[in-house]
Amino acid sequence: MVTGGPWNAKILKVKGVDLSLDDIEHGILRPLFKDPRVHYAVNCASIGCPNLQTEAFAGAKLDAQLDAAARDYVNHPRGVTVGPKGVFVSSIYSWFKAGFGGNDEGVLKHLRAYAAPDLVRKLEAVTSISGDFYDWGLNDLQG
Image (cartoon, rainbow, N blue to C red):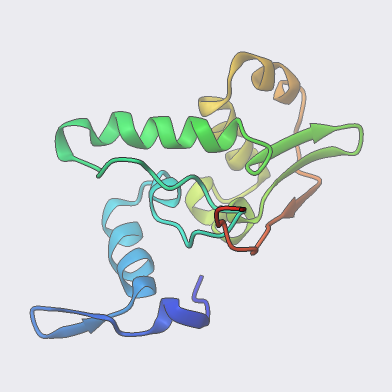
């Protein structure tokens, strides 16, 4: 997904190539690693995004860090909510559905892989997603 705003600004030069944040995420990280957990690591700092991490991602513990970030987001209402009107997911799963399996079944399989037992039970019989949501408000300290 290519967005407007600061994400398209060419702010970095690597080996003579000007890059934007979108270039790094969508042109390098996602295509190179083909790992949907990238979405839990790179974010825009909006309220709807996964949490910003408190430590740098590091090679020796990268898988564990990405798994933890995935679990945190999937098990938070910003990631998934299940209620009487169905299952609603973050728009991240809609925007990037291809990376999460290509359809609702693939997204649900991904969610179940990182869901806590209570959420797994709620998702057991679910076969489709009812809708998606996203809060673009700035994730800022409230004083």
